[in-house]
Amino acid sequence: MTPLRIVFMGTPELARTILVTLSDAPFARIVATVVQPDRPAGRHLQPVAAPVKVEAIRRGLPVLQPERARDPVFVDQLRALSPDLLVVAAYGQILPASILELPRYGCLNVHTSLLPRWRGAAPIQWAIAEGDAETGVTIMQMDTGLDTGPTLRLRSTTVSDQDTGQSLHDRLAVLGGELLV
Image (cartoon, rainbow, N blue to C red; front, side, top):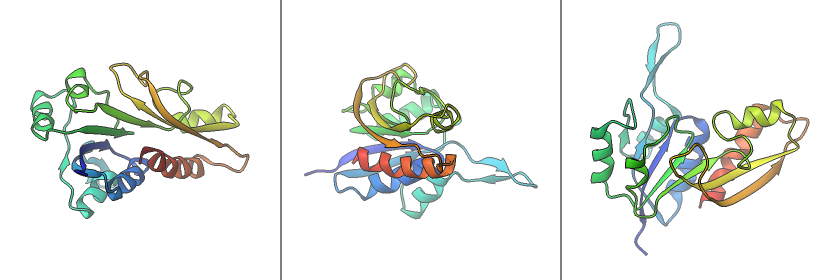
């Protein structure tokens, strides 16, 4: 079986965990990782690479860091990669139709809630703040809406009284990678 040519788009630690699982899958060939640009941080405001960029470099994967996903030059870069699939996990920008239409098999989003509950940003924090007894991960086919495409797979997990944002984050990151592959 020829591995799928996959473009992975993500930025924070949650996405790094999912990238590791996906890049280790025998059916996947990551042809590029797309990450938010390095941002100034710390006392001296030095540029800091996002966890996905650090992991991609460690694995020898190509890294793209466009300022805007809508940039026509970036869209052309993606088109030149001829991706079979695009996987998004906490990337941080809404993707235009010009990107969503590129991959042969479309674009998948790994979202850390049981959609449609907690569409958009910070679903883990919302689940905890609202006292949800259950949350999970949804793998969805992306469309031009915000977390509105068809659900392909989902898996739930209990939110305990002992869970923190970090413990739930870590559990959902692993669950998201497992559900994806």
